[in-house]
Amino acid sequence: MVRIRFAIDLHYELAGPGADFVFNIHAARTPCQTVVDEQLQISQPVQPTIQTDPLTSARYLRLSAAGGPLHISYQATLDIDHHVALADGIGETPVASLPLSALTYIYPSRYCQSDRLSLLAMNEFGRLPKGYRRVEAIQDWVRRQVTFKSATSSSATSALDTLTDRVGVCRDFAHLMIAICRALNIPARFTTGIDYGADPALGPSDFHAYVEVFLDHRWYLFDPSGTAIPMGFVRLGTGRDAADVSYATIFGSVVAPPPPPLISVRALSEPGHPWQLPHHRPEALSTDAAVDIA
Image (cartoon, rainbow, N blue to C red):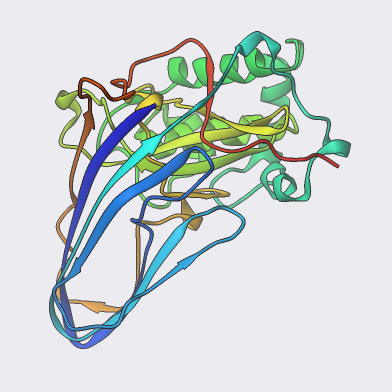
């Protein structure tokens, strides 16, 4: 088990009429991720609503703010008790046996054009034994083909763009890996968290995009960018691609582009407690419960 403490600060300057917001910054509550405590501060006297998606466990903060400055501050402490399994024993689930909740993640989506990558996927991975190790090979291939470099992509960059440019940030690595998995009929989804364990040379702590792949009844974690430590990921949201899990969606006008989020994260370890410091592990990790298949 790991215990993580993190904080997110967001600042906006709104135009006169104000704006409506949907934030995805709250830690998800899953069978393996327990929120111990959390605090939310909002600088304006608004009435926020927090709603949970029953399918993904993502929690959405919704509010309407007036013109002027708006500061959102969220802090949480949570325990993550991972499901750990031997990678060699994990197989793929045939499409005919996939649960309905996983089906949507084998189709192409806005940033993951899997229907355009079928030939590449089959040439590179079609002959490999099916299972966790094949997905791991996809992750490692993406990591070799793409170079991590900040400010090299935009909100319009897709998996096909990343395959062409061979450079990007964590969301681009995730989109390419997801598209290749789906081209092989392996359900894969885009997941957002916090980049615990990232090299400080890459910049300050930030939101992190990684991949969850459905194998043998369960969603397993993969980090194609290789920039953080999966054991320390705090799950916020999951979706088909980045379009589904923006940390902030604004319906209205801002005076100027908002500054980058201020994020801090640390792992706790104290004598007498079962908390481990996150570290890289060879086993397969999941923060979800097993899913009954059809």
